[in-house]
Length: 229
Image (cartoon, rainbow, N blue to C red):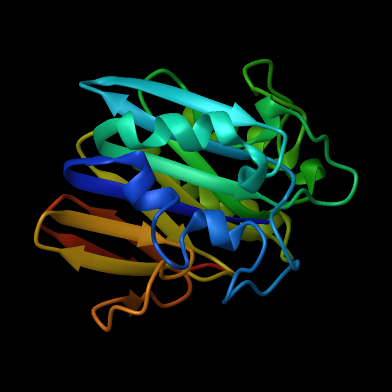
């Protein structure tokens, strides 16, 4: 389980997305407003951003609220595309920086909000950690992002209790799924935000229905129903 967020649009600071909003990921790490599973997200965090076309990451196994170094640097980190997450580790899963999203294949940044039985996922030598989200990310990367919808539906068939909210970016587009948890979209004049929950009370936030594929550019958001068990 976690809370995550992605931005695509004009260059903005990471702090303006993650730390500054009144109900941003910083606040969601200890007091999420719409989280259905778990009370807080104190088992790590990660921020990924595109430096031109190159994805770069900063990840930690500590609570976001306790990282003064990140708080001091985040206002200076500016990017047109950001993926960030705060983590609530599932029981039995490792707590280490490599277990925190976003995961990457060198082109994409990807976060998973949810849970999946590791028995429903193939073993992978390219997974960044042994937790369920890292294994799921490796499977998605192996199969290709263009097959994300198909992969989510097939994993859900193998694990009917799975929650499979995926959020990914390649610097030019955002791709997400809703499967068992919340996701909202905010269309701003300078870009688009996808987030597990709104980071403020702007009435322009819209909740995305469950079991949908989301594909977004800075100016367009497209929803496609996902059909599965």
